[in-house]
Length: 290
Image (cartoon, rainbow, N blue to C red):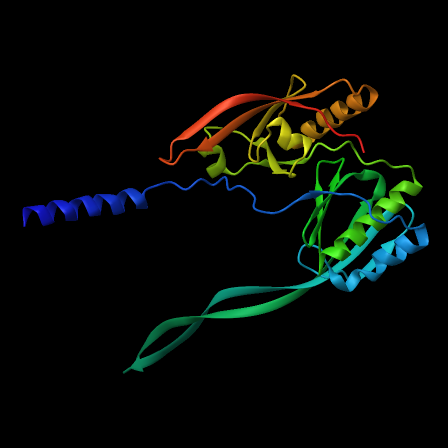
């Protein structure tokens, strides 16, 4: 009996231990990304027609564009959708009754819910000159912009993703707009308190959002979720400043291919026993010229 009790207590402690393990809010991406390689160059009329004809096969923010307008300088997609709002209000009712000559008031009420719909619309404007990188990911096309933002397009099959990328690249070629040297990673900013607390940080951080397979970034040792601390000895404070510093480093590299981009990161990883190892790393990145 004593032995059974001991086994039960061990099992109970095991369950409690499992239940209290804190799961990392920093999940590694499982998507497959690849470097864009042009397969076909179109003239402007073909490229424009290709982009406009993709309307029914395209999703932007989960919605199909109602209209696509393309000119030599930009891609515009109009999106319309309906949002439904619900509002619950307490509606009082008043009554009463007489007892003899005395009137006794009564109060009651009920909650009533009303629904309303609002038609909304938005226009996504993509200046071709703002594109510095094109990334393919299955049925998704990612356009990295010099503003530090990424536009994401979903298409119904991967061949259409390649076709859209080729069409955009063809228009960029008309204006002599070049894609940046290949680095093979994207970055993002987070102010998520749970994520910051997990790595003992108090303010927003810029981190590596994705890594391309066999890219210069992966070969140099950069990892997803690495916190970007410095680029070429300049401290990183937010995503806009990170973009400015990073593009300056890329331009310096274009002017002198013997230079490297030095990225200081805070790298952390979770052990099997749920403890966290962390260290600062200096990544020496040499981009690939297209």
